[in-house]
Length: 345
Image (cartoon, rainbow, N blue to C red):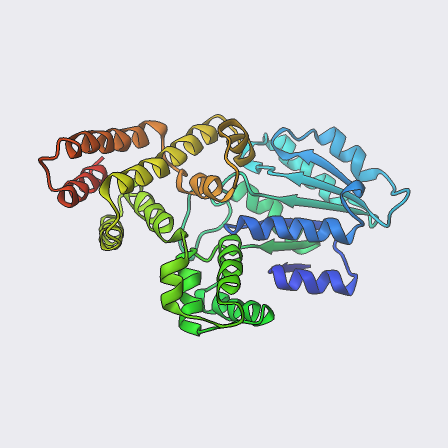
């Protein structure tokens, strides 16, 4: 039926013409989760949802659930989270497709992906789901609704920021809105949190670009994430650009080193978790993370990485910190040399 975005999904729900099949995926995990919540709300709430673990999907149970008739709701709604077709045997993939083909008009079968990289490590404008996942997605595109939740262009997000600020009684310059979007890497959760803080601060006034540079806390973390991602992917020019931006902040070097190490540790945990078949939620629970954003980004940045490679980079940082504490080195030069050494690994 349709390949749509989050906005068009909302329009579809308002029209009352729900699909029987849904598939939500993309790099903007918050947007994926928001789409799922919208469908849950549309069918009458969580009490009307049957949830199945996509990583351990019981196809016999799914087939039975899909045949049930709703008793006290308009739809029999089934939510399958993180079903990776690459992990299914060929016979199971075929069986899953057959179940999809026989879903009745009273059943809504909803897939969403937030815990693994459906693109299989591919990046850039031409990235697409892995072939086995794409077969499922292609069928649902024809028979139901697929919503791709990728970060929107900076210009589009800036327009949305301006509108949201206006609703809170504030004005934000377009250049400032674009700066906020870029500072937050176009991630909707970060943007909303920072915009709420800025609107509260100006209290009906004007949000300027300078104010964003002074108040938006993810600036350091975002640049550090850009640095570590570039280092691990051996993108030297991107890494050295991030180094320049970090040094321009004039942050005390011990603190900067600690932030970079912390970011790499997050990615190392994510890499180890991915290797063991664990999810974002597992890592949050095991290591006591309060917010999912850092873990989600670490999962993305860990694609194609091994804990051993990340450990080499951490060892280089550890050696640099030891040299730094001797007090006989130029800290800025040491930091740059350490990044170069990490790029060579």
